[in-house]
Length: 116
Image 1 (cartoon, one colour):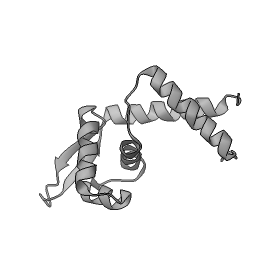
Image 2: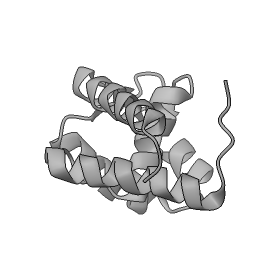
Image 3: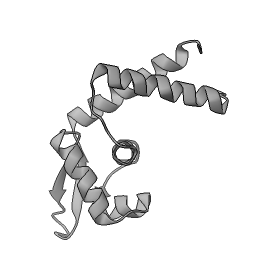
């Protein structure tokens, strides 16, 4: 069920979520990296560097740098497309799925807490 939040309440929720992520010492992802990760997990595959660049409105090198960082954290994996070797397919990983599941749980938990 959708929640009705004012802009201040929405920012307060985001603040509490990001603070808790910092306190827990999890992965320090940029907005771009988080956007890519959420897209990969929430939009049905396949996902390619070219497709992600078009979706986010950035260049392929920008996507590649973000994927390099997320790959080092084992949040995503990349493989060459066997049908078209020019394409790189981005795949989900167990670590990435667990990261987003914990993030979703954290958002839900913080949303249930009363506003200070």
